[in-house]
Length: 516
Image (cartoon, rainbow, N blue to C red; front, side):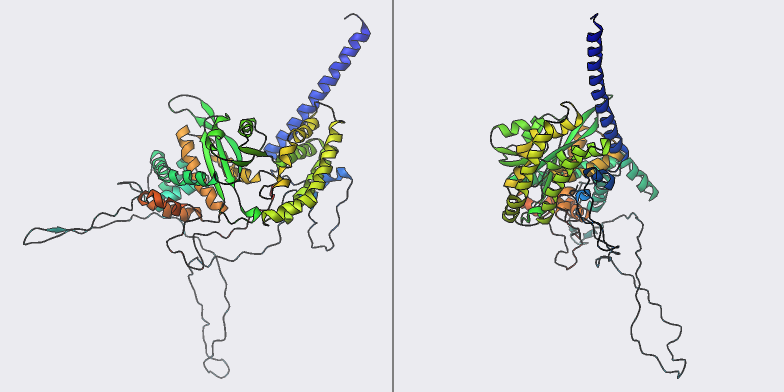
């Protein structure tokens, strides 16, 4: 290439390629920095929204919060709340302080009690260890030598084992709900004067999961009978026992939260563990399911839709997240415009949260479909204007390729606008991963999946998981398979059920329709 003009043209083409690559890397780095160091919320700042040149309406009152809009995408605005009352189920220790004298200083007569002032303080009792001793006296007849003794109780969760059901439940809750690794628990119990090896603690957890596995399997069996399931997965690092190194593992979750559609059926979440992310794993987990699978665009799900038994529904929140990243990283006005249009769809979902499917479908058809048509026209126009290999083109291209799946929710009142039901269920693992870092083995992953299934299903149905596990671990081994449904979290009743303040129930607020 001796021609200077050709060399200049080649260099110019090279500059264009390198400039695009540099922009791509800068965007990737900005998004990565925000994911590591920034807030996980997708709430947009006013500065980012000003790209649209659409001023937000000012509050009508100085004490009034700004109205819900593009900066509260997918979130229900929290109201101002004072101190929450202490539960009536907590025991009360009454301390009454009478005055020094109840005689009138004027006439010396005895004063009459006309009322009282009451104040309350919360006192937490530090954990302590107890030893439960069971005595079975023996009696013998002095004349004929006959013996009498009560039979040994069969309430040990582990045959001839040391822990009570409550002890195992505390270890399980601390590990899988409070994200405290077993070696930290062992140090905690040592401070109480009880020396327990981490292998001993894991043996208790493993025994509990083995007994509870049929309950988790029954949850999946009931879930597969539904017409819609949310699915997602998250990676974990797994040790290779007996060998050096690690390998990748996956926790899969399959869930159906019936609260957004006002359903009478209980909500269910089931976890499964696999070594790797191959598509064969969800195929095995969902064998026999016929209905709508709402998930992200993971290619491992593609073969599930080919036979026609499963219908694909997408996640508009996933598409929105790609645009939000571009607004934060590059201040893209095109991405911000897309975020604004999607926010209008989420506002509709917030209004119809908890309504029956028929009513939700009617509102979506009348209000959401026109907005989706406008979003589709905007998407087609912008795709023809952006650089083909830019990050913006990739974000818009994702929406375009997944369009049919993304808008399927507008044709079915039982579906959701996004897949946050599954993403929320995985949040506990994402938080716990920062504490325990690795899974000890594939077997330990399967143990964790059983516990996560029961704990998350408890959460979805407002059940106190510690009260549930304490009771169920103690009697699952004595329950016949025909009565297994009585031990499902949403069918379970604590031993003292019937009181107005049920200690097995948690007073929790339902999730917003599209909480990000």
